[in-house]
Length: 282
Ligand code: GUN
Image (cartoon, rainbow, N blue to C red; front, side):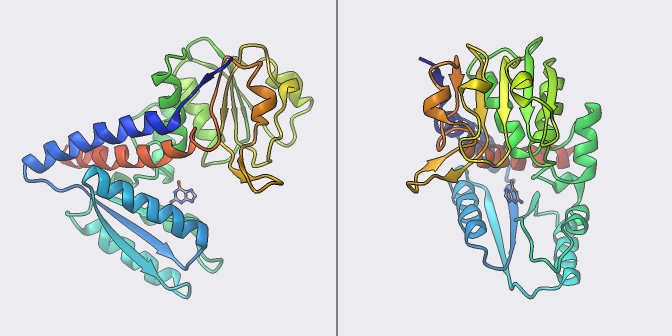
């Protein structure tokens, strides 16, 4: 039987560590503050933003909520970000994605001051990650590395295969696994003979957005399988990109959906917010 990598438990531990650091800052008279901006009322975004605010309340981070109308112009949003950039009492700025179609997401992400970019989406953050300089690492990829490390799974020298090359998950995970001395291969929609590549993996990270796509035929015996996907299956049950029931018997460790990668994203966001204070202190 595979080790079940318990993201819920690991995320709870990380949030408790953050809570202690926030309390230490409070003893020095410093408040940690995150500004969360949502434009429009996309229902999934409302749930994510609500969970982020709840996590802030739990760890003792002050959250400033900006709930803007769907019709908000790009200029108005950029002006708000510029104001938050200038405020010394705001440590982190998060703009929930996706944004309404009339707003250029790249322009918005670029407006966020890199030292407040707790999502790690700014090109400066991504560039720093690429060349091994300090900077914010986006939350889901950083969470995947924490899942592996805190489950005592060695990365150095291992064959790491990532399925999916998005800017938010696939590419940064590849850079992080490389930083941990893994041998990294990134697969995507144009990869020929995907199974042949994934079957080499000691550590397989799947982020393709296709429910139950990865079956045991894609897995080497004893591989560690990290599932980034989240979907509803034909019975309205949550499932990942990996067919869990099929793959679990051949894996040595696997993340469940829900309760695997998902809870780590918010835990790492909380971590990035306290890191922001440390960075801004320098
Ligand atoms: N939308 C989906 N995931 C994310 C995330 O991690 N950060 C932001 N800002 N928006 C998202």
